[in-house]
Image 1 (cartoon, rainbow, N blue to C red):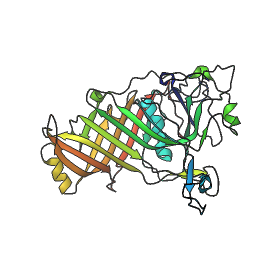
Image 2 (image 1 turned 90 degrees about the vertical axis):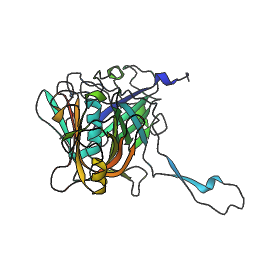
Image 3 (image 1 turned 180 degrees about the vertical axis):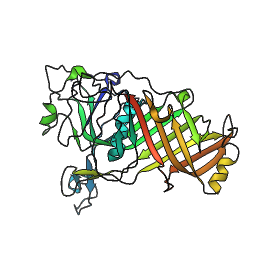
Image 4 (image 1 turned 135 degrees about the horizontal axis):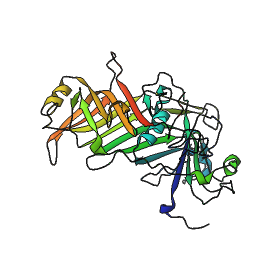
Length: 357
């Protein structure tokens, strides 16, 4: 086996609604970071900032037995099916990769506009716990050609959903996206994985999306409709999904839990809208607030996002190395009178059509 080094790492991702399929990376019919399902538009390479390990999820239970000896014995351990394969992917954020992970997180709470030109994906809190969309993720660990149509080395997580999505940024940088995935199956060239080993991959179609990451300097932030100057932020949305096995060795389904939003922002004392003591007054008076964060409102142009959430401050600290202000943490709360949470992504319909039903 040849030496393998970190710079050779390559990851490919493909969306799917199939409960039984395996990835093909066919740019004419399948969709990755980009793709319309026609016209050789599919692009599947997923550049990430770290060399993510695709964790097989194998777990072992221990039961202490009367073995007549002081040290542990192998018969006290048994491998069981109780943990799904998992991985965490961090990458520069575009509307194109964001839209994929939004659908994998919000599931049936996702819709896609029908207009040509700029398509807008809109995600709102789901009302059903069911899953409609997955992705396949492959860590490419060999060099292949289309004529080989075989993979005996790469690692794959099949039928993955996103259970947690974080976006963050700070001044002088680009926005970053972190997606936590869990899948139904992990495979490589191990016994019993013939479907993966003999899969009909189109390796020549593993192309990159060339969309530019969204810059922090392009953002508009508002609190209660008042423009807000911030030097940094972080927001995490989770669906708290659980993998269900029942009496099986393999995952039977994912069930979505309660949708949560948490985050933190720094609000300078000098801010004209909610600077000074305004935030701590809201905190002590138990007031909620409407927060908006976007690079283009309502995603009317290509490669844009728009997040709106009603929030409640959970902690406020006055601090700062350069400028004093309020370092606040918050969580999303519904005021029960209006639509309090949506997350949108806008993209060119000639490059990407997710195909949300």
